[in-house]
Length: 273
Image (cartoon, rainbow, N blue to C red; front, side, top):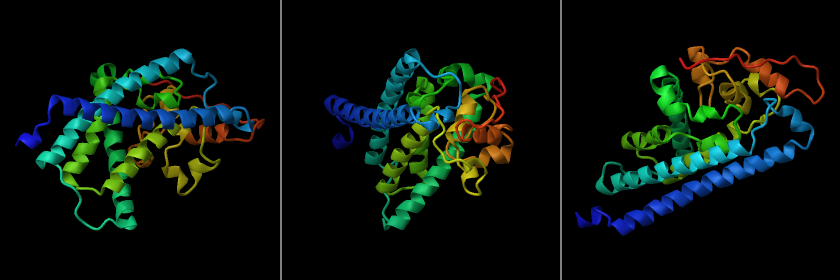
């Protein structure tokens, strides 16, 4: 029993480790995507900027500070997650860990998270939860890579909860978990990039149309509050009729060759509902 109850020193050390890991993950991904966007804006790809406005230093500062708070929430909850493994609430995966098995678990975990995110995201847009949970994230009307973790503390906790819920029911290979953790921060920063990073034609491609692009999520921030709730895929938005009706036209406009005369398709303003 003594081994199962860590000392205060051990808890602080573990908290610091989790905070540093999650901060590095966020900082590296956001910096890489921000530098990529900065570079592309100095090429013909500058026409792929989704909104006319660009975020300023005050936006970056607000988003960064909020992300630090969210990362602290993740670090605290990670301690409870690890404690759950120690006391047997969660169990390590005992089966074969071939590449195909890891890939299968990773795919299932990602699809599961997309479902979890879609419905919790819609719930956060109800009048009951929007002001107290999700409103802070929507202060970033023109998002940037630093918006990825710009959450209120309750929203940060809600985003984290998926992982222990998944692990409670499905013991998962460690490699699949780490792949999911890295995947979600890369995709998260890409979707908040403010510059469309996906190839032209993605929105109508037989496979690409099921993927959430930068434009897809940017439209949600830019005024389409009652549309485009998906995290990684558009399955639920299409099935539930919540994909923005101007999404394909907007994506095609944004990804049109520089100088092409394509009509503007602004987001329709929406309110939490």
